[in-house]
Each structure stands twice: as structure tokens, then as C-alpha cells.
Image 1 (cartoon, helix red, strand yellow):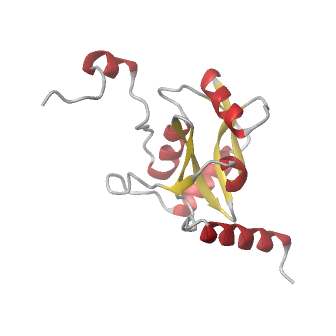
Image 2 (cartoon, rainbow, N blue to C red):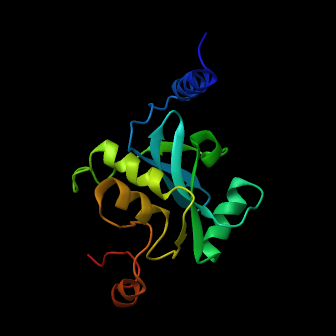
Length: 162
């Protein structure tokens, strides 16, 4: 007989295959599509991800994500990818692998696991969930969803005059 943990991993793999999603690899970045933005997590194995969540409990995945943008503190959580994503679509998106060398997967996982349960500072523009996972995977804190306020003041909106 298989242990319950193996059944859970097998069930997750089957769900991913049925949904046409590749099984994430250790240390992969997971992009979760939410209304108007993307939430980010890092895959740590056996169907689990590590990600940032509000430090206060609220009902519903969407409510928790919206609340995290209004708070200055978040907690690092480890939970099943299916729970972290809820009903939202998600995909593996290691979008900076061509620019930065990913750290070894065992180091990524170790760093992520060490942070679980810790409360961290949160800022939509400088310390958000995308900064968090990129720091874990590449050792580089960056987010393509937001620009520093000074960049938007000096450059204006993202548009081209040519």
C-alpha cells in the first residue's frame, strides 16, 4: 500500500496532467493568475509551494491576496499548490532563466523551507511575492509587475513614441 503522502502526490500529478499542465520541478517559479495581477510561489516538492500570505487569516484566496497589498507584514507559508492557487489558473514560469543562473534546487528549497512561518516586511513596489520568489531562485530581488515610483515619475507610462 502507498502512504497517504504518495497518494496525494499521485493525485496532484494526475490533476496537472488532466489540466494540461507540466509537473513543476523543484525550485520552479509558479505564476498564479489573479484578477488584475499575478501571485507568485516557489515549488518545493510533493505538491507544495512556499509563498507570501497576509499575516492575518481571512476567508478565500482572493480576499487574502487583496489584503496582502494593504498590509506591511506577510507570513511565509507552505501549502499545497492547489490550495495556494484556489480556482485560479497557474503555470510554471521561470521567465528569467535566460538572464540569471538559477541557484541549485537544493539551495532554493532549503532557503524557502527555512523561511516558512516567518513574518516579513511587505511592500507592493519593493518587497512583494514576485521579489520574494526571484530572490529564492536567482538570488536577485526583482518584480516585473511593478516599477519603483521614481521610474514611473521620470519615464511615464509604458508606451513608445516611435
